[in-house]
Amino acid sequence: MFTVNIAIMEKLDLKRFDPKTRSFIEKLKDIITAFDVGLINEHKQLAEHAPSGFMDDMHLQVPCVYSLLAYGIPGVRSLFEIASGNSSGAWDAQRALLLAALGKADVGLAQVELARTYLDDHVQDRLELRIREVLEDPGTQAEAKRLLTSLIRGLLTSARRRVAIGQILSSSSLGPLRSEGDALLWEIISKSVLNISDGICDELSEIIVRDEDENVYQSFFEGYPAVLDPLAAEIIPSQVLGEMFATDFVVRRLDDEYIFVEIEKPRDRVFTDYPQPTAALSHALAQVLSWFSWVEDNIAYAHSHGYPGIHSPRGLVIIGRTREMTAAQQRMLKQLNDLLRPRIHIATYDEILQSARNVLTNLTAR
Image 1 (cartoon, rainbow, N blue to C red):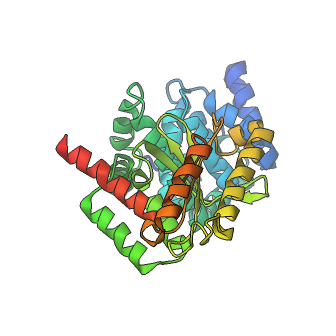
Image 2 (image 1 turned 180 degrees about the vertical axis):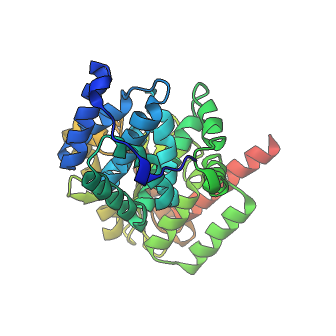
Image 3 (image 1 turned 45 degrees about the vertical axis):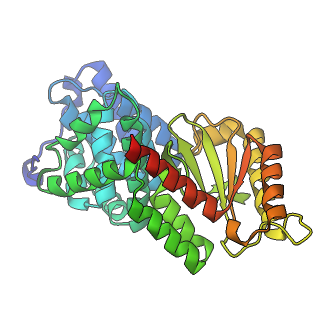
């Protein structure tokens, strides 16, 4: 980690630079001075194409990438997009995302300090104040950790890009925070591989018996997505689709297929005594169908707001207990699933648990 003595830092004479570098600096100065979230895409493009020759990265690319943090969560999401790509800024964006997940403001400020050589001091001071506020915000840290998890899982599923994980782990740019960064990365990596064990299945069995509210099961499944689907690559937590439909969460599989998950309680009945679907099941199915319709009508928006590549998503409704159903109700559930296949599947908590135990048995036998 380099340190900078602000008192002796001299301003750059922009006339001494080539036209391309001078143009880059002027554009970056204008964007940072404005601090308008509407310019974030332009800022992102600068970060992806910043001059990265000898010493240019310290003065130009590094401050340009890390200054995206000043936009808060939108800036963190832009860092994720850069980190997921192949531009020269990807290396720094990956570390900026890790830094945001750790929430270490002082280290982040050191990365933008050399921008003081071409920014007015009052602009630089405002930039650093905003970055400090962002990096100390728990909400921003949580979003950065979620996106970092998504990045790591994406790298793990790509044989060509898997080497980038080693590059992130071996980074010396975090200096004294290296151990914390390594610990967080290894935690994410360990949770990103297929994670099913007897202990996990036993824990699910226990909370099913306790008959908790939906949020308990949502938290569990978000922590152990392989219990729901062995090919789960990422959990996209609760969010609003177009300010209309709030999802419990979404599973993105390794094959880039999306599954909208609607969670009801174990005590919620699947069918009435007739049998016919209960109000709880009807509501859950209506919610899933509403998501399908929204995605179909807003496909471009969905692609750019958390669901890249989404097409014909599937739905999973988790509700009730098989052990509480009569033979007629179990038969009707099978018939209903046959009708809804392949877009929607209705699973009881007992079925989810048994499926996870079957996967574990198969892995152990193998």
